[in-house]
Amino acid sequence: MIKVAILGFGNVARHLYAAFSGTGEVEIVQIYNRSLGTIPLEFKTDFTSQLSEIKESDVYIIAIPDDDIKGFSEKLPFHNRLVVHTSGSVDIQILSEKNRKGVFYPLQTFSKDRDIDFINIPICVEASNTSDLKTLQKIAGCISEKTVEIISEDRRKLHLAAVFINNFTNHLYHISEDIVSENHLDFDLLKPLIIETANKIKSLSPSESQTGPAKRKDKKTIEKHLDLLNNDWYKDIYKIITKSIQQAHGKKL
Ligand SMILES: NC(=O)c1ccc[n+]([C@@H]2O[C@H](COP(=O)([O-])OP(=O)(O)OC[C@H]3O[C@@H](n4cnc5c(N)ncnc54)[C@H](OP(=O)(O)O)[C@@H]3O)[C@@H](O)[C@H]2O)c1
View (cartoon, rainbow, N blue to C red):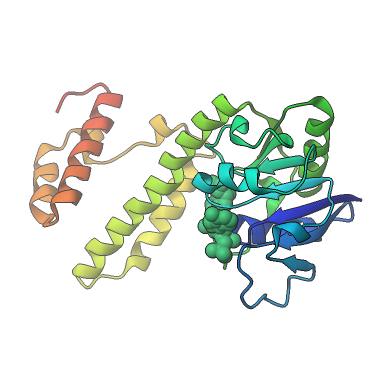
């Protein structure tokens, strides 16, 4: 059994606990969190809010916000153990020199109250020595069929691409929801379109999948859409994305 301690109790920490708990090869020996509120019943492991009480483990997974990883890793009261973070954009080197460093980045979007199957989630691992890399590959292999070794520089670029795919796309859903709800229309009407847009990518490239007034250069439709928008932010977003689509497809505005 590989002993793992999870440091943090947010979105990623909870999902990692659930995923590892289903394996016979990894034991979550403890979850540390700086505050201990009510712990949901499904978390059947030891909890602590004291850094000094963190149990000895083979791997310590820090799953807290990116900007806090550096300072937190420096506060850990032990030396020469394998400490990893789960961020897509934070360099491995930011971790404290006191311990051996690694990264265990699951390339997916996680929200606390949404179940997710890890089996198809790529886990990007990195470590400062071969033996630690093997340990990370082993625990990743217990929960996912896709483990990839990726250095910090490439992981940052992957994360940038992921932000466009997930965070920005989701924000566009939000804008669409605002537009339909302002006009007393049902957002559910758009859900089949969301699903088909995502499904298309399984067989077509993004460039082949593109449709719409921007690509067709339907100027009148574009102008009508801009007239309908009463939010200046949304107008700017519409214009910039239209321009980007037209540039990508070789047409001038
Ligand atoms: N969410 C995703 O979709 C996703 C996907 C892949 C990777 N990641 C990466 O995973 C990491 C965690 O993300 P998340 O979404 O799980 O974050 P999150 O839900 O916001 O994590 C909150 C957790 O961090 C703790 N925390 C906050 N500031 C802290 C500090 N200064 N010191 C110690 N603990 C602190 C919180 O403690 P309290 O409960 O006391 O507030 C809570 O346990 C990030 O590096 C993120 O980039 C996230």
